[in-house]
Length: 158
Image 1 (cartoon, rainbow, N blue to C red):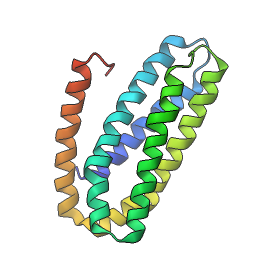
Image 2 (cartoon, rainbow, N blue to C red):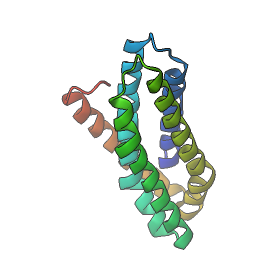
Image 3 (cartoon, rainbow, N blue to C red):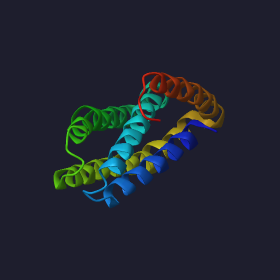
Image 4 (tube, rainbow, N blue to C red):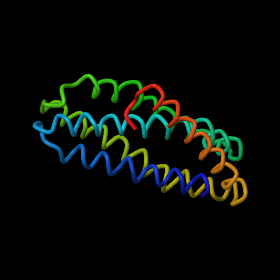
């Protein structure tokens, strides 16, 4: 699979987890905790794939507009990784506050996904071409395997 196909498949998994999280109730503490663990792992790996593989190639192949999008996308990752997810993780899954925070995470990620899929990915296809995207896809698959081994070795929920 090429890099964009891999990232889009990740997006679908993340959106499905977010929908399940949003649909859960305050009584579903165990389910919410499991979903949050899955979401955290998916986001962590996905962010690395984008920031270490696709984004640098996209920025290098493009011009000023691509550079702007590169930094905007990285800032959106930082917001989710450093601010929003840590807050959600420390919020009681049995609370209404958790529901509100989960909804905000979902909205932020859906916005980010939409921008990537409607703007960045189509531009990346043109700028990088099929061969480069396939090569980046191979790197992503290797990194994903390595990350999952690392995370499972560290007893983070798979």
